[in-house]
Length: 290
Image (tube, one colour):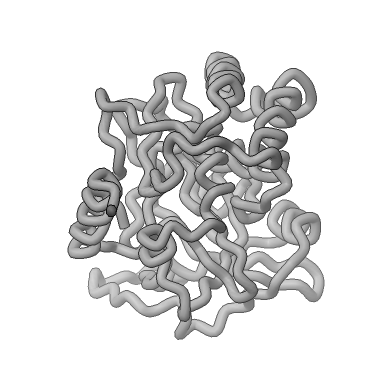
């Protein structure tokens, strides 16, 4: 018999599709001449023919860190002035996303001008898991000052992210563990990026690592289920890492209080040995959920 809670979650996800805004699909081209007449027209990213090679993580990080950044346009639906760019280094070029700190919208529940660093911190934890959940991401100077720069990942158009959620695709288990560890408050179906070959990336991690438990996600399919040995082992490795090099890296990006809260949160997950349940005192889903 279908789980009533699961049916309710599916209904809310499907309802949110009516308000879907996919910031990865359309951009407003940049105007290098500075003579914008106010008649901006959005265009599809796919129509631009930008280079989107598949790169090894270290190769991508070197490109993003050391390459020149050429502005292409602004993602039209982004609330934080995210920019589509091309990074160039030698004979390698790749599309990327640049989110300048100066463009971040103030939030009532996160300190101002910290979202870019949270995105990089999420990549740092993702890399420590070995699961390759977050695309290569760095913090650097760009056309509008310091910001987060992340490799653009071309999604497989044949895969529906909402279907992955509704059908409880097992590839999302790892991402669910990761989100619980970093306290992700905004895991929408639209933040899933399935790619050819079957891997699924997750993007948009600016609202993570809060000291207050506020997990908001569409990935509740495994709530209450025990972790596999692999999942439990990754959590233990993350916790050990916070006492070492991983902790040093996170403290360079986050408030030390947030790093300590992350350690306590992972301790709780290890002790429970199960996927968390929604907190009945807080919203379980981001809005819109897509």
